[in-house]
Image (cartoon, rainbow, N blue to C red; front, side, top):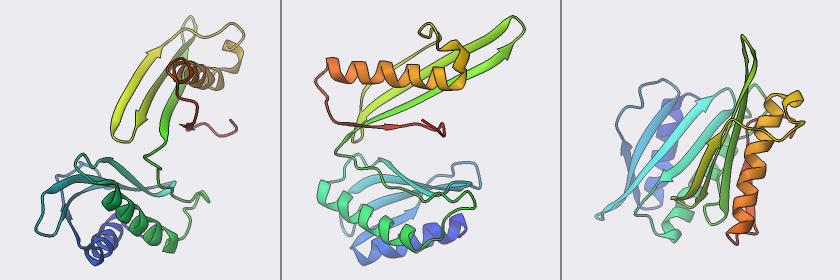
Length: 182
């Protein structure tokens, strides 16, 4: 399914729910589209981002700033119905919808070969719904993590993020990462 077909299917599905979606500003690539969303005869609810790539179609609802929870649920139901009709991507991965009521922990790590050895970096962002709670990044790893390269950096980000969550009273979170095997 092309990006345009995905955007058209989402627009039609939302219209059935009494929600108007129209093309937003260009995201300057052929893999992403932004839909501006509003209730019929109502105010703007924000925007949705749709992506089509190697991992299949993805919905990112992080710009629905003025969207009541019941409307957000209807939007996600439309997405689940549309993405459920799609075949899996060549990589065999299905798309997913993010439960915005759960604390989301987004982590990443990197290891680069440099002239004097390896250089590491890690970062994380913690969100609840559309609200960013905390972010951090760095280049120091726990001793012993260097030998694991990217995995060590990814795990450093996850460990630091989960420590922050525990120290701030968040006991149930979902960690999102891009490294296979963790």
